[in-house]
Image (tube, rainbow, N blue to C red):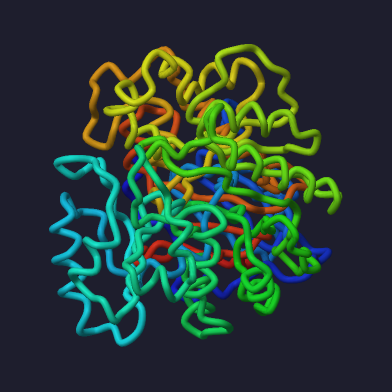
Length: 508
């Protein structure tokens, strides 16, 4: 285990490799265990000039390239990998987490009501919460508006479920958004839940236009992604307002690579710096637990996929679909411009042609493994089939779906490798035949949008210095922390409280 503090000054985050000079590399990293790609033999050192890696090799080989002005960072055995990519992050929900009532630990409807009553005095406007999950309650009944009306009738209450695909509203919020007639009906009973198009209306109602809070929250989300060891992310579908807000940011403020997906019908803004708008995206359904997943009989969700396919075709952009049920997976796979199918918790039971890639959401597997058998039945044998996907050449990345799951790629990799929850259960792994090796899990995290999936001459210097060797065991994966993160050859993140060992080479 790597225990030595990594060499970096507090001012290093502002340091960037300057314009290429003739004398030698701007920076060299030495004394490390550098994996140019997962499964490759490690090397000791690399050289960076401008925003690119220009050489990899032994300490002696790389030091021979250095000049008097080259900075050397001695990593003392730390592990270096290419930067990871998160294929689906709900950037604007993630940016608002700190401003919302946290309901993740509530275990009953009464718990939710108590948390809201405690929060009411500090909220003059709408009370917004997130993180509830009816599967943690004594009876997993769908919640109603009446339960929230007991807390407040003159103040709007909007509570997002943990997965973000459904919101629970009181009557005042339903009336304010004018979606009272669009609440979901489950098992023949009217609920206080909205999803799909109605949820988009609620989101729009709550969005604070051009708010400094929203802007600062988005920049905070970039910092959180870098701290997790991510050098690039792809967003959930963006409204016109959200895409415009991202496009209005100073390019210097966008420290990681951001692949923006626009909602169907939204015109993508022009790219700027590390910000691209390169796909149409659609969230086609809700959770399996509430019976809202796009299964074969869910006509509205299937129609959403068809409409998004048509919009992406018209815009000459690829389509990325987040979908859970087998009917939605098959419908998304049939779209000629489909690029990624994110989630695919359940696969169609018959063979079908795949040109798109599947993106795993391991956080959902660790939440779902204890109830999925009961809800799905025999088809559970087709759920979260990561090894099967990899063997078929279908595995195209991993996603957190943050904030529904933690923005932490090492946790996702550990789950794919062990198929256990955070407490280490079940001991033999859930559907253990679908485990992936540590090398294959790392390969998955480096695909589907990452600019540089390897550390090699001529490739962008997007890389992460880790505290642990990912390929040693599942325990080291779980313990690993990002110590330094480089994008375009610049240090954009350094873990606090590390001490310097940065040496500018000088001739005697």
